[in-house]
Image (cartoon, helix red, strand yellow):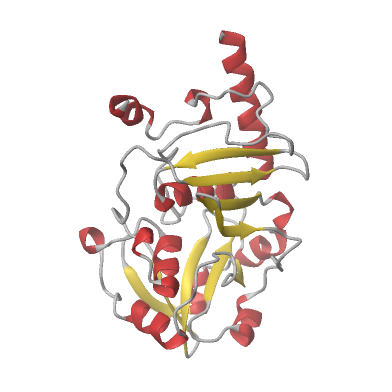
Length: 268
């Protein structure tokens, strides 16, 4: 089985085994339909290329962002919900950097978003500054510079873990400034920011043993009655796939899943 997992690493839905001909779990069906413990792509937000071209005006990009294409999801560790992105339960509106500066307090996590790009997470440390993982280095920048023209929002409530005191969150972030390349313990900006706020080793590279079990589930919510579940051995593997979904958008994930399922059941 180990060899099969190695072979599947970095593949897309085209190669994922499934047991559900419709690709979705209805409310009356229990249990995940796909059990995997690998990632589909090489994250990350360090990739600066835009899907729709690199030369878009920053103000135009801010105006064009539409969170209607975001895929809602819930992350479970065994049977406990540890993350939830749900527009009905939380405000997922985005703001300009100027408005964000009026809302942020030290210790806040901020997510910058733009169409066709990985979300970029930062830790607000006060005095208009943030600490973040960017291009394989932990940097201390002004929030306006770190945003690169993207709209953002405070995302303290997405993860359900108990947060550390704000001063500890800031200290965690500031102590890492300057680390780079092989010194890094995080695979992307989200894992780093979440580690700063919650202090959980699971957000670090190798923070969890991969021993065959798949305790994490990513439940993707397509409608009130349709969802799809993937399983993972570690939370950082799961975050990689969740971020890939954020990059390509809800419609693309739906289309990708439907194409995969059609192919699988044609071949059977």
